[in-house]
Length: 477
Image (tube, rainbow, N blue to C red; front, side, top):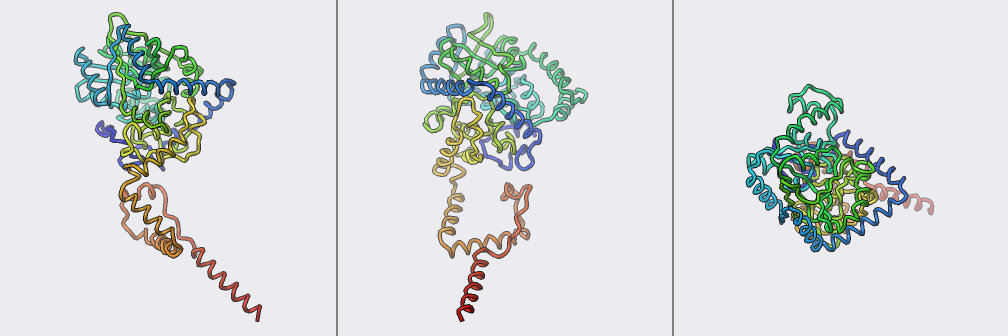
């Protein structure tokens, strides 16, 4: 996959152009890893008596925060600005990219090290840097691997979950010139050696933001590898990217979210590193870019605004039978899985992402494991209703005509029999027709059309009734 192919054009679930992890040939390692992680997280939660209390507390805190977003964001800006940070606001990804480039040009930045940031993925910031001649290096191990492979992340917590150790060994051999190895520790050491050189020569460091605390003006960055700390502290400039929904009312509430995030995301009691950044380090620059990028659209819908409660733990992805089967790329945008299916339509619009709410079995596993108790299944149903009543891929002219034809055929016995006869004939004739893969690819890729069964039930029943009537008449005579 070339760098050009990395450009994200919306969210066409299982679109033919989404080469990668789509059904029915998804990565075996991804399915096994997500199932193992989900079982582990459930077992950990079951051992904690106060787990449900934590979930309810977190839900109420986020509910309050989202309801008072305007006030809390202003308070956060005032508090962190008083400690030397520069806060900038961006309505969309284009504005955010422009702000980042302005900062880079003002400080003559040539190289950037980036900690993990889903907002950065939303912005497609690496493409912006590349176009401007700025070298940007992902420092999260998973992100570093997929960047070297010219791929997109497949999971919001573990971006390279779809790759085996052998796959990573081949990537390091091809891209870094290292001898092939499939040993996990050796591969980690290789990445660490290459990345440490990047930290030392970087002109600017970037990070995401897990939580932004309003009453203290504190940025909270949670990570396991130390790359977040090095990316934010080693270069002379730190740029933090955050969505407007990341704010919490008070530092007092932070522990409950740290307890939930570690256990739900990676099965840890607490992540290895929790960085609390209260302002700019003396002699260095700190910029905080606060991004909307469609979040107010999610906020405006009372049935979906709870999607902004998400803390990006990835638990719903691990529990989802659809995600396990198709992988992250199939969802066509930054946020895959159940949370992506409710967040993405709000961020990019139903016209681009109207198919995503239908990429679910509505089994409810996502809601059971969500640490913030987001009612994902009911939001999916709501978005499905909107998708078939508003301009979207599910409400195109061809879609409407198809359903009208179906309704017409199903609303009368004679029409129903005629339609079923046409289906039976079509299945018989399919093997003789030059089907175009792009038309029936999702139906025929990896599966065969079913064999036509015996006579239709109505015909068999009619014949059977005729025989019974004949017997009755003969008995009476």
